[in-house]
Length: 386
Ligand code: NZQ
Ligand code: ZN
Image (cartoon, rainbow, N blue to C red; front, top):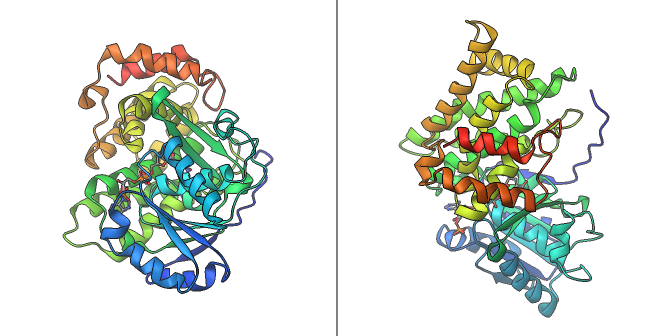
């Protein structure tokens, strides 16, 4: 096992009717800026519940954080925070609203051009406003981690940042808040959490059997629950609860501690979102099967373990088992209603040159657990994903 630090300060408040707990979770004297996306938090009544729980605390609402949150929108919120003297942020939404809250929390106290935060991947964040979250879409794990992703549409850039200073103080995880999600967002959540787990598990063995078993447990839970979420005539509380907790644990630092991590699929996927506005999880479903096939030599031992323990693939020679494992992964995404080929999103070979140029422009030239996925390797992956 590799050396590691693990320190996760986020207080998880899980279960039905827990939004009322905001009454004690948010400091009594706080001046709160609530951050929401488009209209879902208002329509579902969650925003009203949040406001009620805040009671007599001074608060205002910033609306309009878009999926794949933009730098410009986040900076408008930074302006409101500074002008209004807000000292606590409350993100109510999915990964986009929570990521934006992290960026706004850091940018509000940042001296200089806040775009530098993204150019340095967050390494220059020295402090941030405190904030909490109310999660409405289980997928990203942002509710219990220190990362975020911000987009600048004018230059087609979608850049990640990380900092110890942007862990949420608390996150309210009420599984009933997922009941209003459309099937496409539920499927996105399952696939995003699945690929987060794979990025930290499917590398090379370092004799970390506990992390492996945690990861395999998350993958098996998602495979079990995922298809049922799409077919159930009415939402089933336990399935929603298991999805929420699986998605949180998939990216809260636990399963990635002490093991190598990949993230190449995510970095290539971000370029697809930035240039073609494809949902984050869908980009992963396109890239991952092709990436695994390209990396079958480097990931040989773990692919066999994953096939055996997660998919029960035990017959055939090693090469055949690896092929069957990759096919099973692709089929799972397709069963979740998510197409896994670029062509299904209207993209052909002509799209690849620009994607590779952007990847290079963003410094994504030595990706993967071995740092050997060059732009040429990424090109082969995209070609295989056509
Ligand atoms: O904008 P509103 O109207 O609120 O609607 C949202 C949005 O359109 C809707 N929604 C959310 N909760 C709902 C709901 N609709 C009905 N009922 C509810 N309860 O869902 C749509 C998508 O929301 P979004 O927040 O964009 O989705 P997601 O949670 O998948 O977040 C995606 C973003 O997170 C980033 C992605 O790159 C992307 O920008 N990621 C963040 C990570 C992290 N911080 O660790 C890791 C991930 O790999 C990912 O990169
Ligand atoms: Zn993701």
